[in-house]
Length: 270
Image (tube, one colour):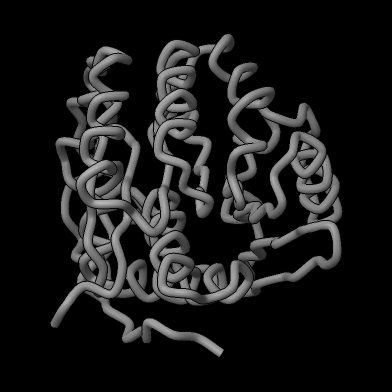
């Protein structure tokens, strides 16, 4: 089987393999595309939490992005963990250099175990400079609260926060509703012309490590194959839900999901 598209992932490494670059590569591969990477940080972690984070120098992040893309031009880019203002500036400089339009931003800020992965100056830089470069932004509820300063308790709050995110310049927002306590998980897709709810049953499991990384990368992969943004979100949510349901139950903490759960996608979409 030949790869259907090429994805560049800009994100941190997860030594346990459940999230970050490792989850991203697995997702892209499982969905039939080709993964390239620019690693922003190396973390030592397992299912119980993060032990340490070692940042990659901004210049090397720039080099990874530009040098790889000049040779193999990606059809789409997924951006994950960016831990400092200098890293964000380096990524922005590289994006200006390679000029890719399909960019999905997953504003990773807090690890599943609660460890903070980004500093306050970087959050401000992300809001003012990076969000407007993305065609889609995919925060979970805590991330949306940090960026918009809106407390989210209901579906209506999610819509309000999504509209606030649109004001920062992105064209589309998907706020993930997994942090609200309910039997149904509601993910809300918002742009200037529509609001769409994706409703799914909540599975009782602690094995959800890497769901955010996986979802944003799956969306990027579907988008790179010609699907619309809304359809890409719908298919990616289905992929992640199936991956949660069939999780391998590894580790004693928040375990990984099953990226080998595959879905067939065609290059062209009508």
